[in-house]
Length: 438
Image 1 (cartoon, rainbow, N blue to C red):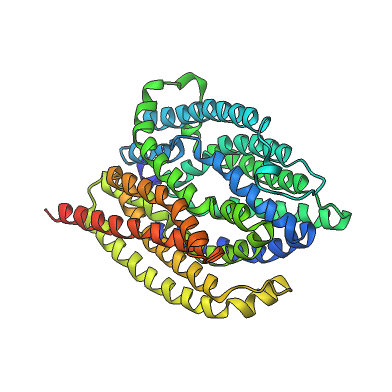
Image 2 (image 1 turned 180 degrees about the vertical axis):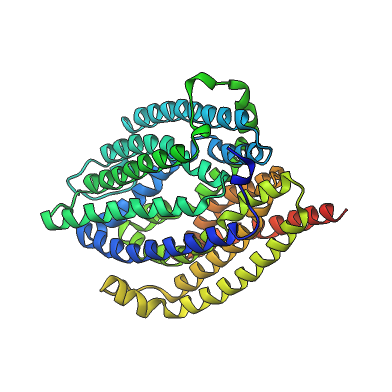
């Protein structure tokens, strides 16, 4: 693998961003199909349960102790130095470590769910389905998919982030095809919908793996090069990123559960659609700046500080445009939702505004975290985001129950906690730029 095969400058970032945006546009279009299709298959109540179950299952993607991010960071560094041996050993040991961790995680989850009564805990009415069994099967399939999805981090390291979005789009197509068959056959079981989603991801991951290691054969993992000494480099950075991931889990995946617990499954549905709506804007922004993290890593390894500063300024201009777009989306949400869902879920105006504010703050932090995480300066940000996660749930409960804000209080708690990262990330970014000038 020649060094000039892996490039981060020129039109590489722009090409990845544009292609990713195109793929995301198709993905958003498919989401406009899948969301009402799922709602028509499951109904309001089951859809709320399904959304909450997905939030719980997504936790398994955080059990890797940050190995995926550690792989991306270390592999990018080795590629910048054209170190083929280090590159292959890093990829190989990452698969070994994640496989071991996922096996342990699945065993723990299955043992816990075998004695935990999810129906009783979340106050779920009788739906003629075993929620515990749904969670067990979903967790097991998610664990397998997580191992296979390590290939995403390899694509990010070789500056092909757009391909990650292409393959994600492919999985979405598989899932929607399955949903159409379910609707035709009159199937409305949460378990089968969950299996269809997992199988769609598995097929995508297998196709993606074949593509990557056929194109980059010298990165293909091999039992012959297993070297646990390379785990230190992955884990040292990965553990810090793991703390960030767990904090993100608390911030982004517990709101549905809190609403389910405090206000019932029916209250989850309108919030879930609001989150999905503004989440699509957030996803577009993440897509556009997604290639930057690995590019910052490679540029920093080569001490290309001028390119880093110039690129960061451009990303801030992009945020300004997205900010305006989000405000416009705020005003058109209600008429759009009636067309989208083909029914009126009586969305609260205050909840719409608060959700928009939260996502504007989230996207602002993305811009700085891409740079800070890309150059590997994560000690202070890890502490800040952990504190942010710790206060999120009690703050949400405080606003929801004790300030009588209801569901609005849940997102208000997230907004208050998000203030921390909106201060810390910019501070560290400015400090690191000053160091570059010196």
